[in-house]
Length: 499
Image 1 (cartoon, helix red, strand yellow):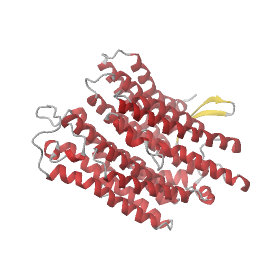
Image 2 (image 1 turned 45 degrees about the vertical axis):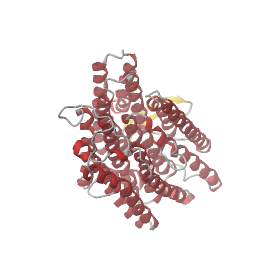
Image 3 (image 1 turned 60 degrees about the vertical axis):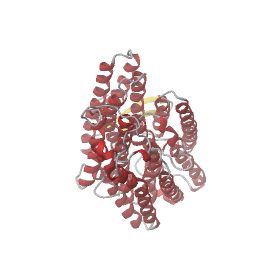
């Protein structure tokens, strides 16, 4: 084994080993636990940066381990996996800093950070999976490692939310397993290959392939929160804010969306999937989910539930871009994988700040909060405008390319979906901003904590400021080669639409 073989394994180990060690530590070993978390996150970022530079210059990073006869556990770094990997590694660091501040003084922190590290390990494994069986194993590990985080508070509501989460995700995993096994019996391979590996099958297999596609998309659609598989996501908002941020921006929801991208482009191939006639139903399902999630978000007074239904809507932009089946739409959908991550994690960080500092958990309690917590609400404002699609925040770039791609592919109806979604986003975000910045504050907040002259604890304030700045920078600097948009263009050129 050479260095290029070891690097993917080390990326996995950089969060797995700290997590296993944390489980063995006593609860009072706070400093050592913090050092392990931050050191693992920094090592992971360094390794991912190394692979990013290497893949850009043509290096090949791959590790293969025997799993079953004729099946291997494959970890492969290509341009698409690195796109998701950079998001996961970068947001793990800022979420770790946030979680340290958020959970200070609370019980069971060791358990939380142990499973937190395992969750990131599973997410990284999903990103690096080089075949469908490897993807499936890490995908299910993600379910098991996030369940204890959802039920971390230990309340009856948390337990009910955890039961719902398990019911949905185990059902989705069963569908994904069934589709994977059926596919293997037809092809004898599960390797991810640019432009897919199914177009050589005869015409008689096409009905079976349509059923397999439906099984795989349904299984992935549970975590991606496609309607009607989205019900677990709003319920899971009972979890602590760092977990909500992790579910929506880094791990679970993104793993489902990333899997849809893999299935369409690296299993079926986008041209073959279009020929099978399976992309149009996916496009309409994604479009319905976009509008449905936005409509429900308007009626939520609980801030985190409003953000949860916003996620149901926003993540489906990725599936919509994939299903439109054109290079420009692909770029819009894939880049939203990263853009939505930075914008949505900013919003959840800010929601957590409001709850921990002032006891604010409902939209109706936010009058005048911008005067009390201006930096937090400034970051929230950037994230909200990004979700609406207002320039120059990153969300505008995603919607611009999705719209251009729809016109290029002759799917003009998508423009109305994008416009309607942006209008609905404005309806449920702008009243929050108007109340926070322009209405008079109450005589007393629901539950104010004293941070002296500071707005809130630095560990709570710094992460949303950083992620908001990145969301803004990704829009302002989109033309640069190594911006998320620039890398999405490389993915489309190298992996999806090769001549």
